[in-house]
Length: 74
Image (cartoon, rainbow, N blue to C red; front, side, top):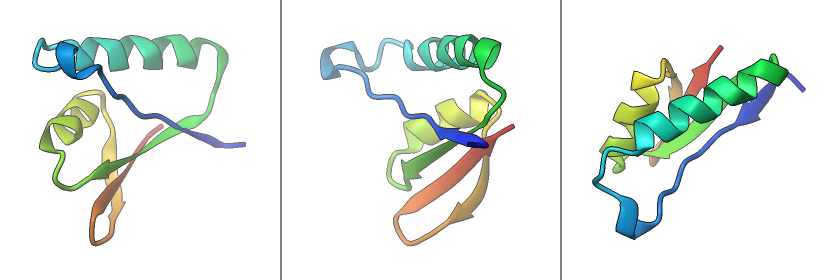
C-alpha cells in the first residue's frame, strides 16, 4: 500500500467552532509517526469548507471530476 484515504466529519453540533483544522492536522501528524503513506482525500465540490481545511493541511488537488475534487498530500 502506498496511500491511505483520509476524511473528516464532525457532529453537526460541533461544526462552525473552528475544530476541523486542528483535528485533521493532529490526526495526520499522529498517522505520519507510524506510516509513510501518501494521504488522499475526496471532497465534494460543493463542500468549500472541507476543501479549505485540507488545503490548509498541505493537500493539493490532483484531479477532479463532475462532483468531486481528488486531493493528495505526500
